Image 1 (cartoon, rainbow, N blue to C red):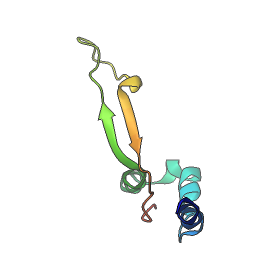
Image 2: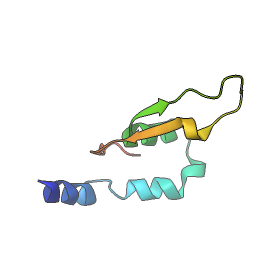
Image 3: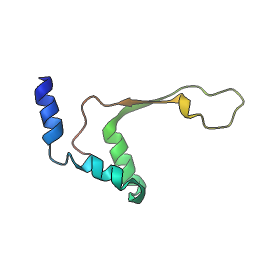
Image 4: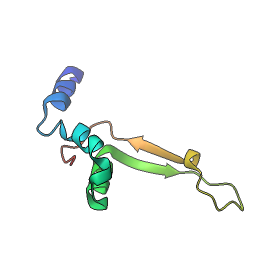
Length: 74
């Protein structure tokens, strides 16, 4: 089953769109970027920050990647 899934992921229609989107990320609109992220992420876990600090802490953001990518990647 894993071989079949790996083959499908490599050969699905639009499989090259991900690398194309990565190369042109800066030129994409927010809606297009959001669509790509929704297709790649299952969820995002936000841990509590430091009390009293009003700074963004990247270490508190944990992405949960999809195990099966959707075919709607822009």
